[in-house]
Image (tube, rainbow over all chains, first blue to last red; front, side):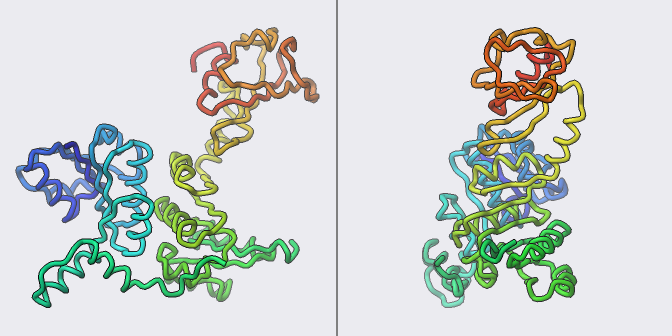
Length: 158
Length: 227
């Protein structure tokens, strides 16, 4: 598949390197050209320097032809905005955003955006590791995050 | 402003825009809360405005709840980052049912996107200044007056110069882009209600309603050349 990845940090560069090795057509975007040093030496995809919430940058990455778009910058809001841009403007069939804040991740999941809350998943995995348990499911991990960040104080609108 | 129409307005972002906006709203008798995530900025503003300043991240649901967003009439997001302003307004609408959300947009290209994504109103100072400059450019001859339906339809004013190919033509003869409506012809400070026989004269101003994407075509017809 043709996949465009926004953010070449640890997660982004790993997804890019792995998927490129698996034979996918990968394009990765980062604001900082130095970030591409994190890519593995056998990475055969394209790199683009630019701002991921800018339509022109995404067009340079040929997002209109992409099967999937993944946003894994360090900014939750930047990821949220860019996946919506990818959905609305470029009609990308599959978009996934990494979101640290469990509540924001849940809110946007309700809006039909696939989100991965790495805070929740990481906390769940570590808990299970510590307890020597078998790993649970993605869904259960997400619930952990939400319960912890309890929505106390949020009232229904009168 | 009378007490009856006073609103509860939450302003997110205490930069220059947020600061002056909050002051003006207070002066008009509205209830205002300013949320600012930078501690220093928030503290400096609190010294002047008192406890209506909250040091908090306006994107965090917990802070939004503390701010009483559930009873806000308007949420205005005026931080310097478009992505933050988007998320603040979407969360305000989605999680707290705020009836009116207004986002400051730094990149004018984001205005249309934000509106598609459910933000009620957007303001781009870049766009406003650009439009002001554009109005001074004679060659364009067409001045945008207003945008309706979230910018889909524009009301524009076009001056008929002596060398315009449409000078001397009747309105019925003009080959206008589809769905263009000539609303009025301003002649010698009088607004005429035009009909197809109305002849355009140099010095006239034509007020027309047009689909935004057709504006360029209209410009070319009035200028008589490709632009």
